[in-house]
Image (cartoon, rainbow, N blue to C red; front, side):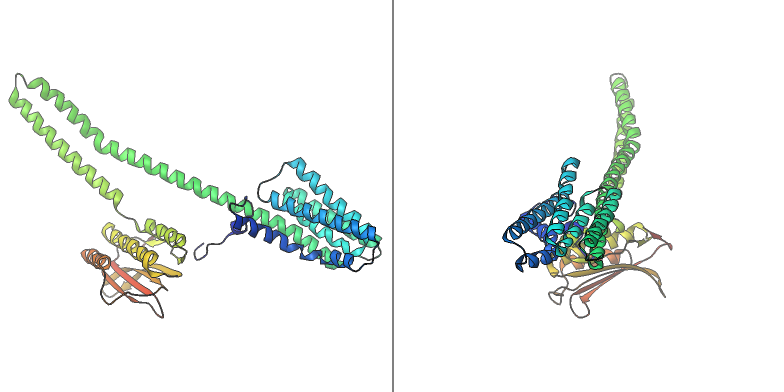
Length: 388
């Protein structure tokens, strides 16, 4: 997603904290929900219980809270063993039941945390069943205490538990997407290596075989027929020169920048620099020379934004336009940084203008509307179409 650097991993859900800051953020994210324990705390502070009841109330509340925090914090970082999860999870409803039956209605709120714990640590199907079961137990205890089914607690219990299962599914999907993205990158790199190997074999296999054959032939002719051996050596020179030309053309093709590749690189570079980026996902079809000129322009423009602009936001756009002079493809790069440093263009922009002029294009630069820098490059377009 362009324009943002935050995701589920920012609070450490689904992975262990990697620094003290992440540890504190994760602990605060889990601990802030403990504010709903205000009802049991108020009940203990009111002094309505005996000293022994108050002591055991504080002790039970501390044990319940510590168990809940440790279970949710630890399991959402690195999953615990199934036996350990079941043992700890069995202790929470047992404590909630005992405290609610002995100390009264305010303690029913503990079942909300039981439901959240079930949603956080149990498999999805088991979690749904246990969330409903813990809510039903809470309602039954409330009826036994003569309080009636308190909807103010039923809704938070169901919402908290099922919301936690949704968060877990979101984390799982995010992990799968990251793994899939890594596999796609590996497959792309492997395919590129195979293509390079095939191209080198096609380019050099025949030429090297011919050079080897003629070298052996020239060696056999040299003692008795030096003139014929010289002809073979001349042929070897021609073949080797042609092979060198083929390799240079192939390398030039590999080194030619692609606009789609540069757009992906621009997205990555701007995001890594902390700049919110808006980059198109598709590019119009262009002849090789025009595409290379726009790709170099985009690379230089994004490099300037990252190094010199101090911008917070950058917009990149590639659009095909129909004009009286023929179809054009227009590349626009605009940021909200500190704007042009002076009235004259630098060496980089001058070089870009010359490169674009070689393919019949133009370059315009200047201050953006309001604040920042604005660059527009135009080149003649080829056939109509677009490529992802």
